[in-house]
Image 1 (cartoon, one colour):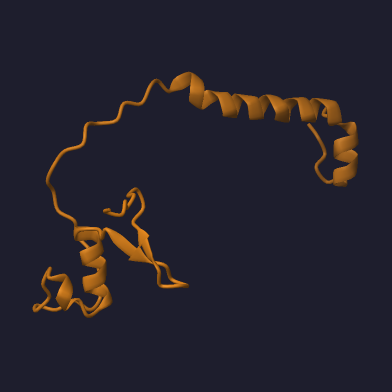
Image 2 (cartoon, rainbow, N blue to C red; image 1 turned 180 degrees about the vertical axis):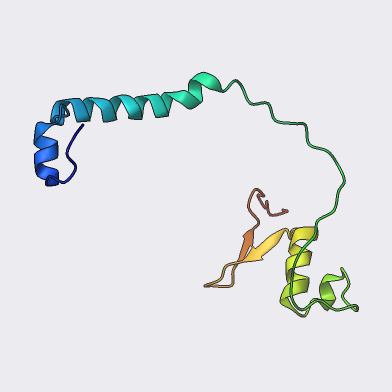
Length: 111
């Protein structure tokens, strides 16, 4: 049985663990941890999207008089709901105010 009242340096010096075995063990442990997920897991299959459902938003500032009419939007709650309900065709540049197409849309001028 070891005497654990010795200083830690003398315990390390007398043990069979040296730098080479320690690094070899850490490399093996790292490889085993990295490869364990790929060896065990199979293919992940995503479910098909389903239509319908409910979107619940936790926003502060809503009122009973709110409507989906974009002309009546007066607060951040209505702007958020309106942006989620139906995206706009054109957005404005925050610096210049110039009209920019929404992401994923290309505006061709009618000639």
